[in-house]
Image 1 (cartoon, rainbow, N blue to C red):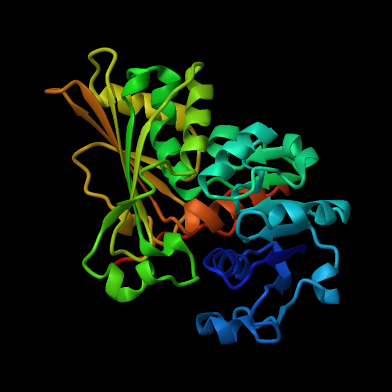
Image 2: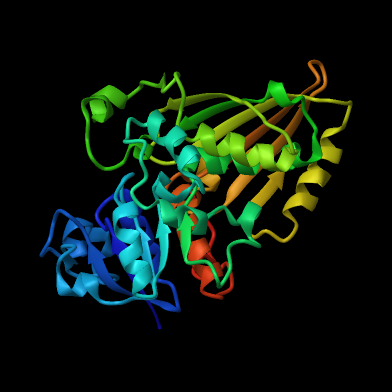
Length: 352
């Protein structure tokens, strides 16, 4: 069996990957590491795991936390993975980091990202950056393979925007300066640690835009779309939080270069994604929403052409805690460990 360790096991990202690994046929969890709740069972912290995973949470200095494993999930905030990754790599583990620490391959690109979230601009493990692979398999499957040691899991907004826009950028369907990303996320995107603006009374029947000066995930979106388009792209990005527990809906706009039908664009999208297991393409007359991806690793993409304004409109739906976080992490794990990509995922979502 493949041995796994989860660092930051008690946050939403940590419990998300724990939930997935408990039913994975090829993996056993060797250690759950966290700053808080040390000595408690994970099922005491999250009772829904009782009988599925009852491991005791250990601190980072505990001997159990230092045992070699095959794969380490860093479900930790920005700045933590860069201090721990080298030690795990030296012990032979594959490392999958949830934060922005390894989404970029140069110190300059990382500094741009870090400045947007108020973190120190200096990366503490710069020699690891060239080794890191951006963990969005639908765009980088060739680079994510058995030789990959370090994966920078993508940001949740970036996943929804990139999967919605990648075929458009590759095919040059829209004017490069016309792309708008209008993105709404559930409250769980803010993480488990409470703050006054994310208490229930502040969120109930309330929605608002935030980080209008520049969201950190824009760095990833513009870089990846630019690579696909073969030119620098800038997008107008608006992030909003809505009174929903989990889910992201990104409505993506661009002015079409030429007259083209919705059916033809759907064909372009289906050809681009080919046999990708987790992207599903829909026409504009299909009724789908966040509920249809809740608890799954799928991204549902709806294609619409507004002939009156000559604009392409793409609506992309993901579960921010799955395809936007733990689901992508396990998908990456499957690939780099040589397992079928859908291992552990072979189930539909939940309804209602």
